[in-house]
Amino acid sequence: MTQIQTASASAPEPSLPARLAGVIFSPRATYAAVAAAPRILGVLAFVLVVTSVSLFAFLSTDVGRQAMIDQQVRQMESFGRPMNDAQYARMEQVAPYGRYFGAGAQLVTLPLAALVVAALAFAVFNAILGGDAAFKQAYAVVAHSGVIIALQQIFTLPLAYARESLSGSTSLAVFFPFLDESTFAARMLGAIDLFLIWWLVSLAIGFGVLYRRRTAPIATTLLLIYASIGLIIAALKTAMSGV
Image (cartoon, rainbow, N blue to C red; front, side, top):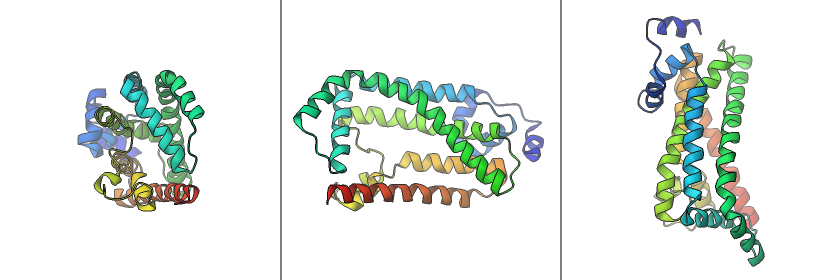
């Protein structure tokens, strides 16, 4: 931590817009500045506003509401639970309220998820690997990585509106359109999102800078965990659907 502070002492603290852009275009330098002077509220507010407002706007449209219903039906069917007419009618009745639930969920789950990720990183790097960073620094790194999640919303929701579908338009499955959606391979690829891969790599860069460790091993570990989760989800869907 001292080395980070010393290296950045002569550099002016970047503004919020500079940090937002820096996470995308110059992540290593940006995370070094964040670690030296951790700021959380501004970037967290930006991520929450972008994600909640964009989702609210999308679900306020007829296309968005129908896409949400179709996505829920596909999810149920992928786990071997086909929906009957009464259940579908009930979903149509509550669909107009989905924008409130969806936007509200973003405001609650994203800060909590960032808190959990920061706590896990703090436990691993500080308690197990002997790191000396403060929890506020770890949380600031995670909060700034959320810019990638906000960018994902900005990119995918207009695409979802054009396609009239919330199905993974940025998952690895888009490169294999010839695969049957009910196969294990398609489900596995559909569980891996390109933006989340970017987010994990960005997060690895941030933790590498903060704890003065190489990025590659951290990124590899995070990506393996993510792939394992996708593998488990695909296996569960395949087993429960009987396909």
